[in-house]
Length: 187
Image (tube, rainbow, N blue to C red; front, side, top):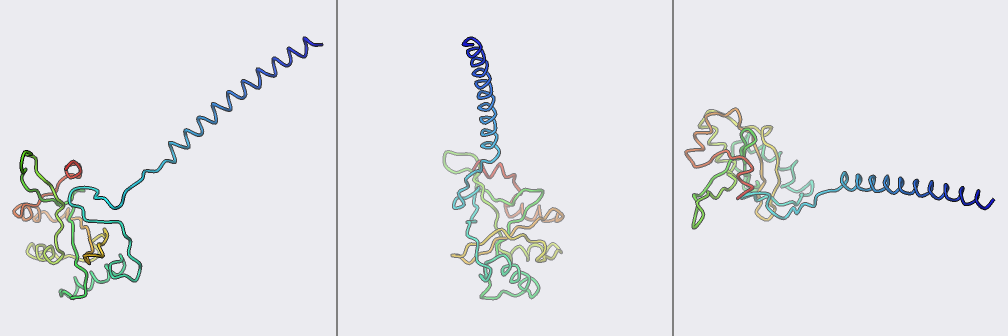
């Protein structure tokens, strides 16, 4: 009887150990799977993403003149009326072409011979005049809200100028170029 008890105890113990090992393995795999699939990256919104990026992460309230809705309404009125209202925020535009932002570069300074790139933010009035000289008009629907900087009363917009082929040489003459983001990130 004792041998039967010991043999059944031994098989029970090995079964429990086997089950325990399987559960531990399953639990570990599941925990690791959860960790790897649900991790999030911490982002510091107060730092610049890349060269010359003035945007900060502070979402204005809905009634604020720098909020996306209010800024769009002001922008549309400004574009349609072709006047500048003193109470209007300062609009800055960053043109993109084929996913590349407009940038300008100062030649390498000091020991470095590599260029020092900065985003090519343009005042909306200057950009509108530049397009008008090329026979193109801008409308509010072609601009994408990027953010605002309340302390300087600036609203930032992006625009895709893929179809504006005449714009590239004109901007090049002003020392502006459409540059890959990797170039800006490394600077």
